[in-house]
Amino acid sequence: MTLIPSCSVALPEHQNSGGFDHAAVHAASGRVYVAHTANDAVDVFDDRQHLFSVPNLKAVAGTLVSDEANLVFSSNRGENTVAIFRPDPDSEMTKVKVGLGPNGLAYDPRHCLLLVANVGDATIPNSRTLTVVDVGDRSVRAEIQVPGRTRWAVFDPESERFYVNIADPAVIAVVEAKKPNTIAHTFSIPAAGPHGLDIDCRTQRLFCACDAGRLVILDARTGKTLDERELSGVPDVIFFNRHCGHLYVAVGDPGVIDVYDAASMDRLDRIRTEKGAHTLALAPAGDRLYAFLPETHRAVIYRTGAP
Image 1 (cartoon, rainbow, N blue to C red):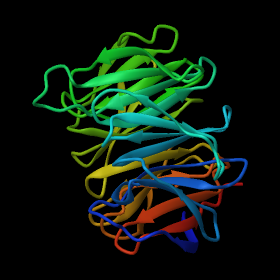
Image 2 (image 1 turned 135 degrees about the vertical axis):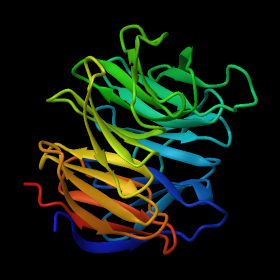
Image 3 (image 1 turned 120 degrees about the vertical axis):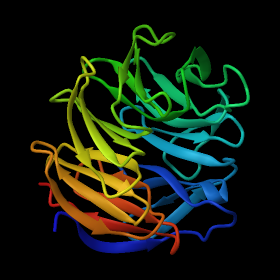
Image 4 (image 1 turned 30 degrees about the vertical axis):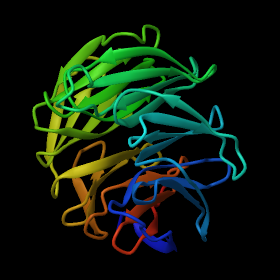
């Protein structure tokens, strides 16, 4: 097996409808921060136990950790804010008002810029936007209109570019960190519903998991489609493990993790999780993958075999 289950950690039960969403790992402490949408909170745990929860984050949709800045970010869709705090239980929190329905997050540590991909509302004109937050002074630097509903986002420190999935039309929007007030390029995606997104900075390839049940691989410099692969169903979160060259795609129905060799793009494994388990987190060292199971409200920890 490419993923070996080692243990699981019980997380707080759901207080409302919904489950878990995007998660991230803090390298120095090994703590995992997961958006617990059903509880309006970010749950924090390590490989042994749930440690604490960060409350009052209405309809939190995602978390992102910057190890360089030693900061945690959360997108709070129910209150149109992003929260910024340090990775400890007593950290002071700052909230910044952003666009409508913040979701995807990506951070540029060099320029201290947080890109927030706002879902918007189809009934409200011009509400599909990206908000660029200056993290240094906790203020909005730019608001950029996009052509459709956003999904996840990533930042490439090599090219200093943000990449943002747009569900419809099926494109990836590219924003240059040095000019963060406009879309520099859009890449067409040959499958409906771009959703999960990650990048291999070394080979400059984007991995885009689409609602159509397709995994699309693109050249991050030109947007050219390099390859396509079939997925086990409708995907959500995707992570590239640069340490062992594997790609992990969470598919909530039927509840599996599709594992690919990122070099050959052959599917290596299909790991059973739980129905509705659509989100993952990858440890920065690449040695552990976390899957979040909504029916049993727990995180399963897998060893990846990475050196």
